[in-house]
Image (cartoon, rainbow, N blue to C red; front, side, top):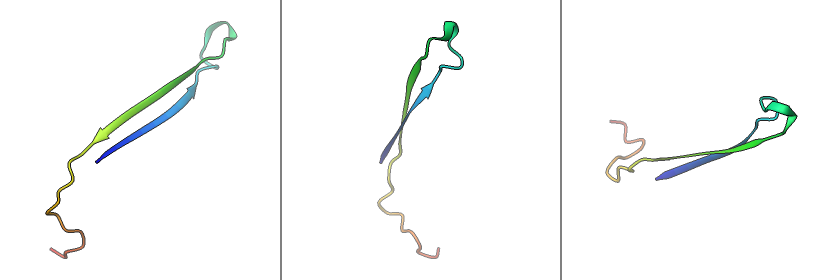
Length: 43
């Protein structure tokens, strides 16, 4: 299973000379799903 999260950060407050800027940030995480694990088995 993989999940990707992305967001756009407004860097206008940190930018020099009053030039607005934005940065796209993205990250992906992957994990193997255990086919033998049963949810709610009570054990």
